[in-house]
Length: 412
Image (cartoon, rainbow, N blue to C red):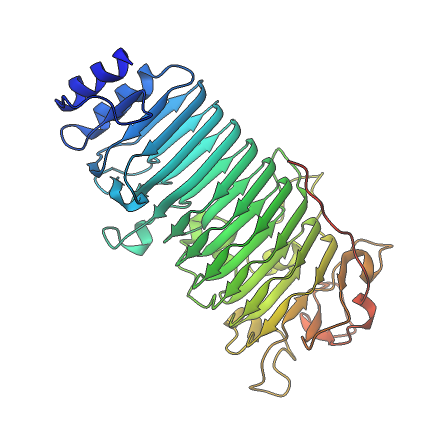
């Protein structure tokens, strides 16, 4: 406690003692970056590090690493009471950087306008992001927004809950190359992608709202990464009105190629179950299940990864509610012959590119339930096909994929 009081006095000149439950703390004012960095560096395992209410202006990011049982939190009644503003940063750095942490929590604050990512956590175990609002405001032009608002990667046992992410040029909430994650009770809006699970295992995404993004929720398996993903459960989410333009710069990667207006997109992923989601008002399509052939057709390079599996497998969609999807499809969707048949009609709620490994059957890739009034289409995406025009609608028959698929119960 003496250490906490010393830091509080030295950093801020206060004399009111530590906030309740805090071992070290900072107050607004002065050199926020220096004060916070000092608090992070002097913290010992088990400390609760606090920000008292107010605005903290940063000219660079702050870093904490190689510690255990650390909580960073704002002490305000609402998360907006503590604002960490990184708009004064230069280029390239993230706002809050945490690495090699064990039992690490960040909670109850708003973090905005970092040059790269707002909250970046890597190589850590048992991570919780709770009640954090992060994103980009109009202090930065859209082209200058960072990639990820909440960005835990290459970690394990990650929870992101009760939080908000907005304005990202990639994904608002991104969990990548991680084993065991839960993303729940969040709101993601105004991003290119609301929520993305990438090359991760045993992840559960539930009770979130993904609205007014370019794409709502992505489950991606990409080449060239250390971890291969599987076993993702997506349920009881509101995936609505994802109709915004894709404002990702071309140099941020494959996200720049995602057609706007897709609710749920599953790319080359294995063992994904999506149920009891409300998927409405997504202007291109409700759900897209595609192989990596599609990004290549849209301009992505052919992967230089001999171990990479281009094709999705064991995708199970059931008990979802679909409405008003495909009303104004993006140009990339309109290039598919037959996608609007007759012309001017809406695109189907579920679109599958029809690609699979040799020897597989349709039900090995995709199963959908036999109830509901949703519509689905299979696209012939095989670049070697001569029987149909490239990327034409091959079938709208649900029968080959009407089956009971794999249920996912992710371990945590």
